[in-house]
Image (cartoon, rainbow, N blue to C red; front, side):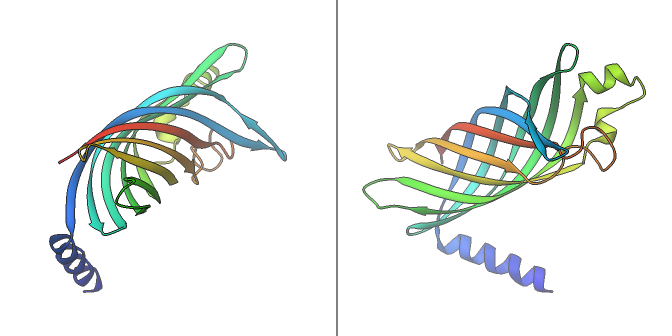
Length: 193
């Protein structure tokens, strides 16, 4: 019952507020880091892609923005050769933001993303252990914190930059590299309807 009331409240609020659809796409500079006996090791970064759509509910200077996106993440590392890890996620996210002023359409925001694994491949582990299946041993859900800013150009076009900090280990417990988490810096272009 509480979930139904919350849904009715959100839908009712969205109808009374100024709202727009935001379609966006951009590049990710992905990397991962893991803790090995107290020393933190980082991988080499790799470029990825993301694209999605969100619904921005504008409440004056504040905004709420739920949305969905397709996201590729990966990194490179050396282990007797150059190897890649690539993963594809379907994310849902929620952002809460604040616009500085009406004269400066710059919005700072923070929120959470929850990524659902579609597929993954770790070239090194699959090379070393032929029975290892990356998709089977990768956590199916990846949770991260989004922090960023978006600038509106001419009331319709958007340019944004954000940082995605991963909370969830990439691999399931006792599988793959222990404590390996995703981090990415994203540059996004979008359009408001």
